[in-house]
Image 1 (spheres, protein in one colour):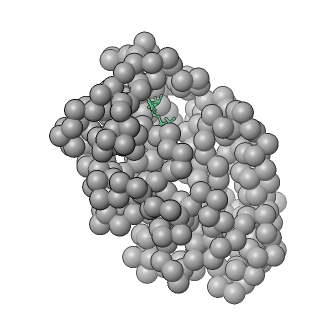
Image 2 (cartoon, rainbow, N blue to C red):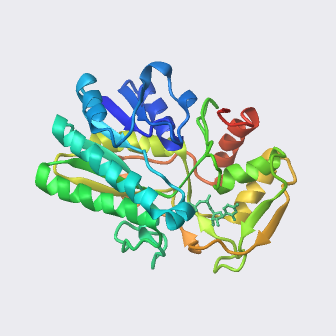
Length: 327
Ligand code: UDP
């Protein structure tokens, strides 16, 4: 298939691009490099462009006979979305509507969308199924929910076929160590802990140890970025015109902040000093997916289950690329 990936120079997008290419799909990355890394994408697959540039998008769709879009391009810092919601609604909502309209104008009828477990807010039932009420507790989650809604309406009215994949905690790095996680600034737990292992930071701050969990630290469902990538490819093949697939992508297993830090200590052999500090605003106790619907619908299984293999692959990348992709 001829596939265009918006935000394909970012963390999850670059891993999906690599896997699509390996699977023989004609793959194009469309990215404005606001956060993505030019080096994460093969030279001859890259188009520099902005979501808001409808003419450029439409030209890319026509020139490369694009049949489907994977839409990764979005801002994803929860805290920043609270202090600067305008930036998030502009890019994540207005930018995506621009993309959907360019797709309509050129007859591209399929999209796989990066949604998030943040659309559930504080879930009533964990593990979380797709039937859980979607009630985000921050603007980031709302921007993703708005687009899920828009896609449902576009499916009903215009025949769009879509998948909204609700990621849990994307983590890990490509098996061959060629690409990995490099956010500027970095806020995610695993890369921060590995920075401490590398001596780039003095300690890891644990955001609260008085949560309602066995060790008091928050539990998350860490899913390997390559497992996310294979789910995207499977979803692409299942999408039907006028219909939507709404799927959680997680492993179904949770790990606490302390368990993640201990796994990093084991894998790296470093001491990794840690200190408990105040809770971070907006962190629910436990976010773990019931991903049985994705497993069944996509005939898909995550290959990396348990925190250790995920940390091992993240460490291989961090150890060999202490400066990430560099400047
Ligand atoms: N966390 C932490 N210290 C950090 C970064 C994160 O204790 O320096 C915790 C955070 O409160 C959450 C978990 O680690 O419970 C995962 O956070 P991350 O930002 O990686 O992903 P999120 O769950 O927010 O998407």
